[in-house]
Image 1 (cartoon, one colour):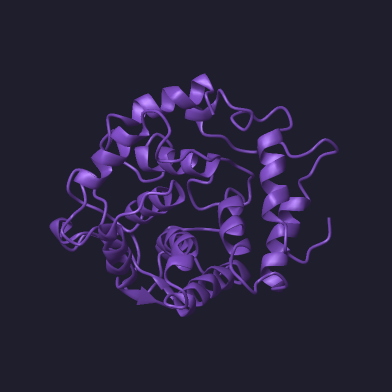
Image 2 (cartoon, one colour):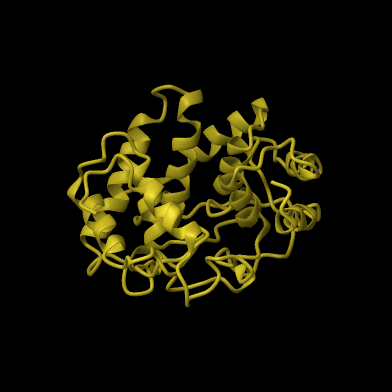
Length: 272
C-alpha cells in the first residue's frame, strides 16, 4: 500500500471503463487491472478507489450487472463483480447481478458464451452446445468469492464448473471448446492471472472445497512444480504492461510468483 505503482494504477482506473475492448485477453483492460488490485489487497476505501467504484456502480444495468459502455459479456462482468466483492463493496444490486449471471445458459457443466441483450446473438467461436472454458473459469472464481454470502445456493454450480475444467484438463488433447487449448502456451507460468492459463485455472480450482486430493488437480500442480528452480519460479511468459514488476520479466526468479504458487498449493495433496 502506498507504492507509487499502485497509486498510478488507481489514477488510471479513474477513467473507467477504460479503453475500448478489442480483445478480452488484453492485459490493459481495466476490469483485469481492477481484479489485480483486489487480489493485491486493495479495498474500496483506498485513496482514489471510491471514484472508480462509483463509476462502476453507475454503469450497472437494470439487473445489477456491471457493464462496459452499456454492454457486458460473460468474460468481463464476472471479473468486475469478483473484484468489487474482494474489495468489500456491498450493494444489493450486485447480488441481483450475480444471480443474473448465474442464470446464463450452461453446457457440459460449464457456462456458454453469453452477452447482454444489446449485443444481440453475438458469441465467440464455439458451438452453443459447448462450454466456454474462460467464462466457466471466471464464473467459478466469482461463485467461490461470493459463496459465503449465499450459503449452499451455488454449491452444485461450483462443483459442476470445477468438474468441467478438470475434465478439459484430463482430455486436453481432444477437447478445445471455443478454441481454448491446454497445450504448451497454456502451461507457461504467467502472472497476473488474467486469461486462461495453468496458474489461473489451478489457483481457482485449488479454492474449491473437497478438491484437495483430486488426481487431475494434483497433476496440474505437479506440472507447475516441475518448473521450480532452486531459488523459486521464473515467469515463462509475460504481459508487456506489467514489465515494471518482478513477474513482468523472464530472466530471474519472481518472488511474487513463487509466493503465489506456495499459497495456491496449500491444502492440496501434492508432493513438493
